[in-house]
Structure formats: structure tokens, C-alpha cells
Image (tube, rainbow, N blue to C red):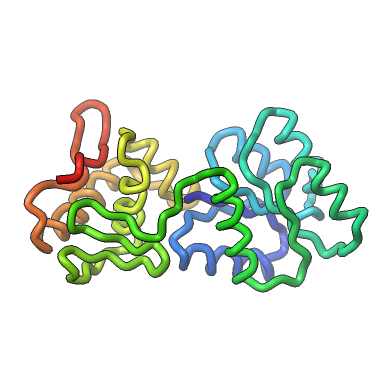
Length: 225
């Protein structure tokens, strides 16, 4: 899952970014409204966490522009203003939820999960492929009940394909979905991470590749045995 955090206060954005990344979300940060709008025009996000008070383009105006341009991404607004009028103004602009500063990071994460459920994005806690099991609550991967130690990127790749079992993804699409803009490497890096993931799964006892290559097109999850 990829989240855009639009916030100009480092004391707020850094803990949010660190907490969400620990939960295996891909997080990108914009520090003003105009930068955020440019990112949304180019990239797809599952949730936007949007501060109201921003440089260049405030959160209310940005939210209105995104909705008027057809953006349906769930938006969670952050604000230090705790009045009914302010909350109504944000919701009328098109926000899906509203969180008052200061807030607990656990509540922010819970509200993000609620927005993902509301959008009917499938979020089952346990993903399986044959005897391979991924507990997304604790980022725990097992095969035949034996624990596999995956790197964060290997885990994200595996979870992503298990969540999208019937879709094919090119390397560029995987870079867009699983790397932040600041991290995006060469497309060959995707191949290297998939190769490493396959090797670890093979070492654990899987005889066939969970992720298959469709030459000239990309990668997809192999049909479960």
C-alpha cells in the first residue's frame, strides 16, 4: 500500500513516516500543496494524509482541486483546529476523515486501515499460496510452518503479488507501487529482488516459483497449487 503524507512540519511528518514504514506501507512525503498535487497527477496512492495548513496551496483547496479533477483516493485531513466549522469545511471539501492534532500514531494507523476497508481494498490478515502463509498483521512469512526471513523489499513484493493474484505487473509498475519516489532505482533492481525472493522460497522447500515471469510483459503470481 502506498501512502502520500502532505505535511510541512518535520516534527510531525518524520514520526508518521517511520511508523507507517514499520508497518510496511510505502510512504512518500510532500511539504507543500503544489508539490502534493504534482505527485498525485503522476503517481497512484492508496491513501492521502493531508494537513490543512500548508505552504503554497492549503489542504482544503488542494482537496477541492483533487476531487474536482476526479481523484477518488481516500483523504485523511490533519488539523490543529478543533471546531465543528473547521471539520465541516474539510469534509465538505471532499475529505473522507478528519484527525485533530496532536494525535496518537496508533489512531492514525487505525483510521488509515478503516479508509482502506471503506474503499473495499481487500485486506485479509492472512494471505496464503499453497502452504506458504503471510500474516500481514506482523509481517510474518512461513512455509510449512517454518519462518522465512525476508528483507523488507522481498516481503513487500511477496505481499503485493498475493494481494493481486490475477494481475500482471511490469518492472516500472512495481517500482511505482513498491518504491517511494526518493528510492526509485533502476528497473534491474526489481529483477534482483524477485530473484532473491525466489531463491529464499526455493531454499525453504517450494519447488516452483511463486512469482512467474511473462517474458516481454512482466511478472504475476503463479496459480496456487
